[in-house]
Length: 403
Image 1 (cartoon, helix red, strand yellow):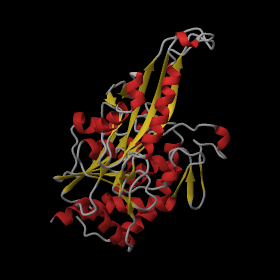
Image 2: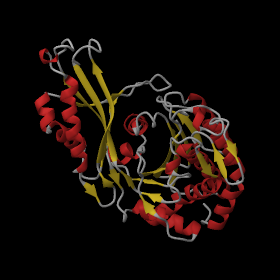
Image 3: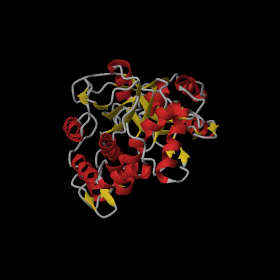
């Protein structure tokens, strides 16, 4: 093991900027929406082997895992390598899969969210190899699947079935140069109301499910306004995202109505609490409505089905936690300034890593959160360089801090 030379680490990260850029652009050229990641996984495995990872494997769900070292402290870093679709092509000023690059930026679907994180992690592995930054740790770099469809499902599988239980995980979701230590959770909730159909000319003979749902909608809007607030994570929230109905015709009373609710959970809120809040609404009780959680059971590209409830807990890593301290120490040592320590607005695989399984999770990743799912998505080459240096230095700093 070499002593940490932060100038050399930064210089080598800068040297590998062209290679990281080329690798990221290769990933972008491979469409990889959730459950269709097989080709991009193969490309990532190829790059891991090329730069000298000690072991590269693909688990039964299709996640790709590259390892360096064999020390007792197991540290993982994660990038989900599936992306959302491109949406309305009229909103793009360039081909989202061919992308582009200029002196400072790289454009294309997945550049910020979040294949850029994978590019930086792989070349962090090369920096570790080149500078012999090995030690009493094993680094596992994970390219995870299906996150856009079901955040954290991949890591539920990796931890519970594949058996990887690291001391902590770095999420490389975009953090715009900050260190992130938490996020609100979320749930996908459904409310169903039954009615009785009748001819539209005599609606009094029926029981209109849409009218019953209308009263529920008003009470849900009021409930949103009084959800609790956490000083760090912010306010819990809910919004009605979908509405469905059945009716024999346009000339009939609706005999069922259902809604989907996107519920964001702050600290102090969990799944049963959020369900009960809705069940206790007077209009829900009066309508005899059924409140339930959605389930996810879509097969991975490998064919594996690993069903789960669509419940994704909030999580917060304490500011004085040893992992937070190690990431802050790494940032200051490399870049000579204090980092911005904050939280994500959106959801990440941390919901299962820390929210469900209690494994400390912290975030530092290239790109900006506002670029996620947006047309004309881009990331910054300087971010790729910074993050590669950070990922290369962090393991030894963490192990050194532990003594």
